[in-house]
Image (cartoon, rainbow, N blue to C red; front, side, top):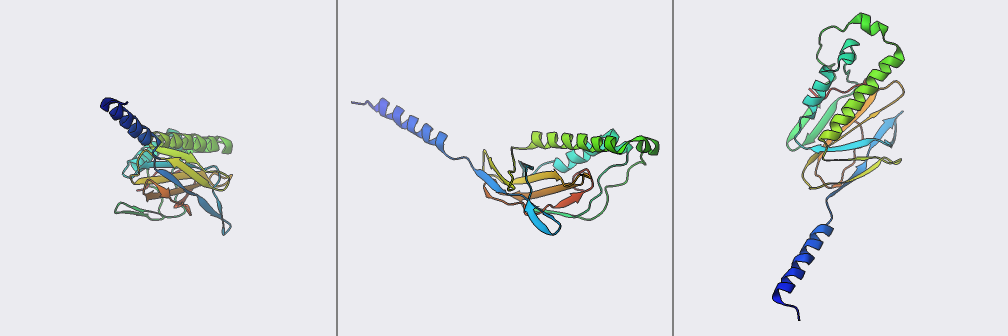
Length: 203
């Protein structure tokens, strides 16, 4: 015969087991892009779940401002398409303007840089951008060949989905962003911004 204490222990163990087996919120969706007027999956793109209210734009701006090579060759971002991010009562609509003008770059340094060295500057910046996003993300995933992603979330709070990918061999950059609940299915149907080489956040 099981004592009262034994029954309480069994009940507690069962509750803990049920808690451990409870499914964490799951976030999934498809990331898409349009090439030559044809919609296609954005394969092997990293998708980051950031806190809904974050400082990523300020941090990206600082990353650009502190990159001496980008500044030396005058390679700060030039927007090609506008961005709109909605959620939590916030709507961000950036116009098609270049980043704020800064001091003129060193033209001699820019002239000395070979095309492949210039490409390496962009690649190094995007690696720093990726590192920053990974440090700030609460979860992340990579899309498969069909553009699908899936990630486990600790909680179902609202988040900002953020993804970026190099678009072509010339190095232009696609940016996806959206604020969504931290569970369920959330597609990123089209990039919010098409940049030239680098992305310094939203003004």
